[in-house]
Image (cartoon, rainbow, N blue to C red; front, side, top):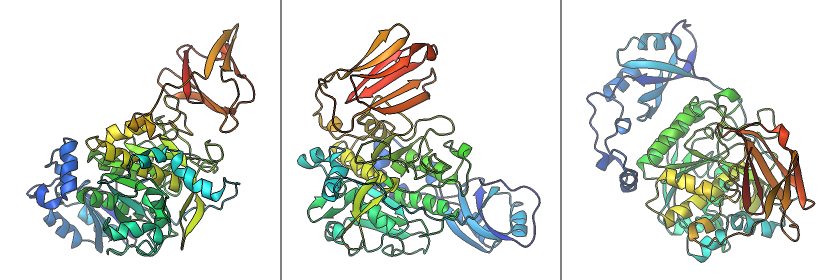
Length: 510
């Protein structure tokens, strides 16, 4: 965690720091020359002040003074009115005497590595998997209604987009000039088509098309590609690149940010997953305040010691995505759990975490919440095409309400898998499938279907307290009509029991 420096400096160590300034006095700003037109339109649609002080540039005189006092400067953040620097401790001690320097935070280094996953579970057939990763969200309804994200601009943050400039899955983007902007924030140039392959795979799950089949739902979006991650190492500096990319995405008119990235035990404690501690979480909330929908993976720590989401998935304004297994539509083992440390719901929704994605030549089978996130980002782009005046937070909550479990939720599945029918007015009245029967000191959950389902046959239930937090949740496989018996005396006053089965949620107040 970053610490504010105040005392005790050595004279020898060179480190990396954020230097925050007190003000933006005597700075001029013209939003109409600074922003892309889509960024202006987004602000107008969201009723955001075009002259918000956080969008003004950092004072050049302050930057020059800092630059002359340290070894090097790197990322300049207009949102946080700050600059990242490389400096010796004695240089920082001197710089803290500048009247325009508010405070300084050290950026601690880390040698963590990217988690790699091997596919160990038997999956549905490959061709079926490619189809179901989109039809699980009723993407066929979007396709039949000619909804493909047209007019929506999506920024993708990752560790590189190797061969996207050549791969067949992105031919439609190249032919139609849909790759609007690219930038490598590590190398500081526009070329992003090397280094990591992870970005290629995630991008394909948003908008890829291979031999006429959509890998993701939003084949007609405009894309912006930002390299913010190293390929194997995960130093703290990646968070500053995420912030820089978010400001770049904002300036250049992005509607949606898709980020299959997360930062956990190499730099934070679980208690820090509170929506306000990490730099990247604060950056994500700031991005949302500018009208962009930020979609982020929960993380792949579900089967590890950490278990919970990583930053910035803890941000309250980030649509955080968990992963389910395509065989069951039930939580897959590696997907990180919620809630946040301050008990807010995460994940918000889920999608397949086992997918077909663009490989080095054709398609490859891969897994991780890295792929559930872009599937939902593509879904969100389609919704925004249908509802171009919808604000980012209206879109956020509408996607939650479209979840196949809604209004049921839990800390493994959120509200479930988003469904296109919610936005296309094709939903009909679903038949009642469950009821709760009171019998002495028992609550019995009864399945009303004449025949039990043969697949995805799960019953979900949770117990919420008066504050809305979950005291308990569970998912059970159903084998008989009396699916579940609960001891009514085990519940406290004011708790609410919600049960979901086969499209229906019922509620019992205790």
